[in-house]
Image (cartoon, rainbow over all chains, first blue to last red; front, top):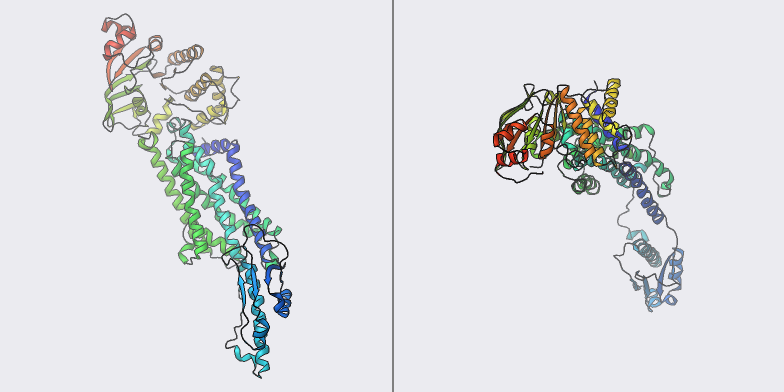
Length: 382
Length: 244
């Protein structure tokens, strides 16, 4: 006789695979997440490596031809065309006293007018400022030399920068956001199936008969959880496989980043996702078995999805560093994935601990669900 | 043999069952007749262990569903209050799902499924997905799910609601056939003709208690009425909730 868990698993999997909506959902989250990232990276890289001229309004250029010539060599040029709508003009005004100030060794006034809070113009402004600064430096150098003073005297401290960031660790900053997509794909991909086999069962009035069959609620819940996890895992595998391909397509070398994810590492990522898929499903089933309809479950689950997102984004952007993160469910997988991508040494022990913690938590949740389904209050909504 | 012994069950302040006692012996069709809200569905759900009685017990062949629910559920076939089909599975797959849950897999499972499909004359719809099934076709699938494992006890909760004449006939014929094979059949209804036409024994339930018990003829004699419907009204003392 076949085990009831296997029977339920087989039936739910067959049912879910025939549901185009579930399959599409599992595919699209895994697919569009990395793709979205790729587009974002592409824009970022092209912005960072942009070497075209900064075109600004230069007023009073006739007062300081040498200065303007310097600006031009630095890629800051007079703008001929109009500013696009919605963009504040950047104006550099050279005062008419320029020649006099320079001759008498006074600071020559140059006014930079712009919207300094504009995100788009930030790099342009930085380049204008830098061009002005280098000219100032040149000017003071000459002034000191003319007075017979070693210009080095103005350099109190010589700051020598040694960048110890490996190419990998630079990449990690960027890749952190990609990891979030891999981790979340597990939560998104199985969602539809999880709702369909729990709240859907109630909505189509098949729950009562199913609960009256000769199998324990525990077996029922495990069969269902494994089927939904299989879907979650399908999404996880898909995004884990896709991401290295997307990196290959991007001109990451232009910003000095190299990522080499070997296949063993990708397999490791998939292995790390397995317990997480079970946990994601257990959480989703826990919530949606309480819902009376598909719609209601969807509402709860979208709220529930905020939780892993908040945790992962929080850790990612607040740059929380604590060893305990390595041992907990979800953050443990997140940290391990970060290490893998950064190419750092892996903490196998911590990985195992967090995997076990994740599985134990899922098992507890599933036990709770089976207890819930044995309760007439939950089943009949009394 | 299905035995119900002084079952009591309340939901909050509402008393659904108030000391219900009756039995449904083998080879008989027992009808549970009562107005809406009399506690019929609550009683049936208690028998297969989805609800726990406050006091009293419900036994299938001497086994209490609250003590050993799996053993009880192996012995019964259920046609529940609400039955929904899995729209993406074919009729055959749905029936096979419940057959395997009852331990019928492999060749014996396939044979059992095929047999019930032939018996209910469902060949034409057996390999179609359930989306678009008519009410009668859905009823047949639900019925097939209930009897595919040849249970000794069959419990049906208002099986004929929403069925046309042909489907009702199929249902009645099937129930008579199963009774003759020795199955104890318990079904709830509030439709008089159906109970009168089908039942060997009628248990009239009102306000969670047995109001009267006997064959349809006996009930009529007890109350001195010609028709079962009049007898029923007299027994429960009101004509609320009866469908003629």
